[in-house]
Image 1 (cartoon, helix red, strand yellow):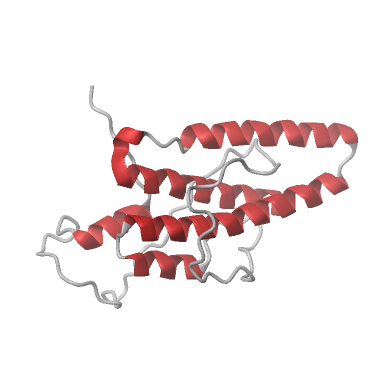
Image 2 (cartoon, rainbow, N blue to C red):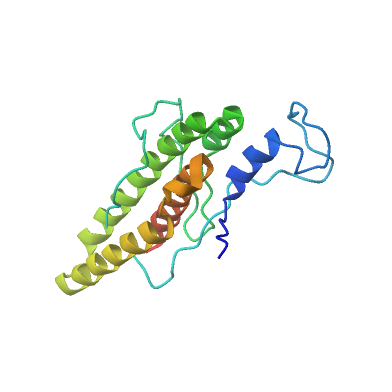
Length: 184
């Protein structure tokens, strides 16, 4: 039985830049410009279940203490909007040029920011709720953490790309969750 692995857009874009598979041409250094009327996609959000709503997140991706120079004071995306990771993250991923440890550092730095947003939103929401609502929210968050960890599981047999994909998945789900809590 064959196993099919789904990779995030940013991971595929980074790998695409290293191979000729994306454009049918020989590998060449990427240029900063894109063809007229087209824009390269940034990160692809992964939707969280709408029934889930809130608690702090679990384990952070490896190398979460990275200092890639991302500005942690940047504002978060508008509530209710599809989560968009901060522009410095996209810049960092582009500069990583498909080098896995560099990409992991970028992801870890953005994850730390998004996890902080989620924790802040969760605590603010908990402060506004009565005891029954707090218990419901706590249970929903615990369920969300389990679902996120299952969905973003890193299979050691998937190699470096699998490690990047699992970290990217956790990052995007965390950003989605932070958005959902901030909207409440």
